[in-house]
Length: 328
Length: 291
Image (cartoon, rainbow over all chains, first blue to last red; front, side, top):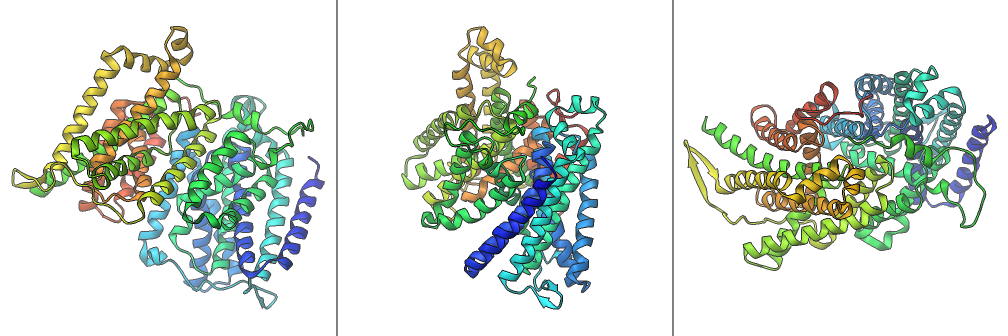
């Protein structure tokens, strides 16, 4: 992958998004905003899971840390969101280092269960530390973002801002993927022993991937808080972590385009399947299972039957080799 | 002291339910290597199988319990065919997400079939209370502790005294060697799913009278069963029992002596400490996955 791809990706996101922002109704713009915010979080999860192979079922906890950081700094201390956002992101990154140092010694389903425990604990603390977080009532009246004196109050202008953040996030992620740091993460995923033999500091690479993923999550959380202007613990329950992971897997793990596609699809799918009514979730489960069985490398891995075109990037098969467990 | 006895028995009862759920989880994990994130929904299905047979079909309770467990056994076989067979060669995470996806479908299906209004599943010993050392204890709690003990004994007999159980252990140890020894591996793998579903069914039938039967009850049970499995040791049956009882006791005693808001944090906190300090748990498997 050349250095041109990330730039191109960013430009495509901006153009497609701007076009859509002119066509859609306010309600769909709101959904698109949520999809764009999820896409940022899922691109982050892609560092940890797609590149470094770390199964995290606690991603929503980091989204929540970012969102609560912004919400508390703006409502309790009266900070400007522009100041609160970077501070919340930095705080989340420090939190991720502290969590990652002990937790990342675990692998496979042990790591999955530990991060799940982390997410459940986060929700419990957020719901019960009422003096600080307002408990299940959440935090309301989060101030709106202002750009050059103009408040991003309506869905369309907020979408433009979110798209810009997504374009930059995707381009940076593409640059990291193309750099030796990205290759180091993938090497660690594919074979830890071989990676450490080539001089890669496996622990540091894992922590770096985990912290990067938490930074993206916190950015998404901050954007979510400023968009909804109200947050509560349910917005960051472990069910959301599972949704983020499902978005990445449906789109295509290890792929930035896949992360964005998955976030878009799974945000709009309930809308398109509204005729199913309350049976939507039953369909959703079967749909994800069908993707796992028939499209193991996700939507980006889709090829028309009979097509011989293949790109050389390692996807599914390498992952299979990496995470296959040694059974006792 | 009387309070403590009461809480202790109730803790053991709820712990017995967690232990059975955790045993089902462990049997499937050691036989097939699948980390079943739908384990909690299995228990929920068990409770609602009871609701369907005892409340909706109004069967007398021995027949109703039998019918509910039969339905669970069939469901276990179905799960084996629909989820395990297509995904068995996939990486761990694919299977994890697959079971999560099916769990979501199961919960939604139960919601569609039974609605969101919770049910009260009666116990065969409904309303009977015993007095032990001044403490009033419901006969159901005692019955749950007894049933759990009997199930554990039966499982021990199955795994150590019958050729079927020994075959299942052989498959869990080395699937290739088991196949070369002429064991019908697929049949034994299917049987482990059926056994897990049956245990979840029993856990669900016993849990019904203690909690309200609610279609969203699966997730909290799954989380407790996971914590029990980690604390006891992943893949270990004695570990699942000890872990389940420990989680149940810490939940009930923690709620009244420490803090009812943070009662669940106790078991998760201990689970995370175990993962960090002793990931093989109390009775653990040899851990390759630590690095």
